[in-house]
Image 1 (tube, rainbow, N blue to C red):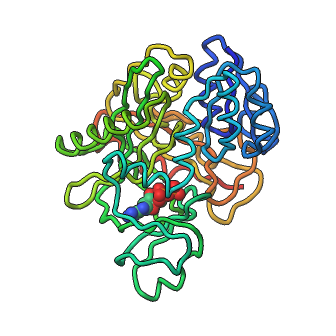
Image 2: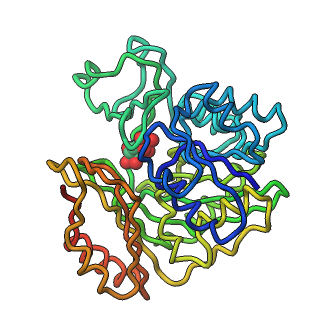
Length: 368
Ligand code: ADP
């Protein structure tokens, strides 16, 4: 089959890396000439947010998918009109692209998500403090999100269409990856805990399975069931969740694609999120997602104050460790906060896993 992916970053790269054991032709489209997929697929250099570029790229493929949601969705609707399979559906991509539509989607389908107000500009803001402002479009990795705590903070509201959302008193940030096949089969990966680095606002560690109560598991299962019914189309989705201090689970947002919170599935589960998306794209039986004990992931992120040709300090020490797996994304240039790779770790207990992750974090540095 000819499979086209909009975006040629690390998510696409790891998908193709996994799927090369099967017989398919892979095509990727990315605006960066040296994108991580450029050497491992039939690569087109171009913008995935341009109608003609996306339409021409998709023509002649059997299935088109994404590894980033900021793509030209009109071209995806048009491709589908021409009989090309598009997974996930252009409808769900369109909803997720816009925080306003995404929040309305949760509300409509009874999926618990923090209370909110929609504003077109800052003069409309009328929401109890403290709250979080989220730009309607264009935000990612914590950009386009700000916390407004006091009346003085109201001055710094961005004057753009946004969602104002109650500030959740977060106990834990969790994620669950859900696969829906065209035949209607569904499967989830075990819930993962995401531990963030407050300075970079970027995901830092993943720990799987999450340490949560049965009551929390039940709430998450209800959310997953509602999401599957509401999405009503094939795809692989990462639902990002907040567990608040009172034990209630809220949906933060959903990614209609492979996700950083699922990287440890490469060695930590019977099959990875990459294998699972492949199965979805080909409408094959979904893969077993069982966990092999405890698994975790540490992002390799460009250190502050270093830009240029990348150097991975301490990697040799890491490679000597048992049950430790290094994944680099083929990016030659580092800059502060850039995701360059990750390290997966397996362990027999949560305690051992955390110790090992912290130890590894102290060993490696991404510099230039
Ligand atoms: P992005 O899409 O850029 O990753 P998110 O909506 O996930 O943005 O927000 C980034 C981070 O901001 C979250 O991981 C969380 O830590 C914090 N955050 C977002 N919304 C809320 C909220 N309603 N209450 C508390 N913290 C929040």
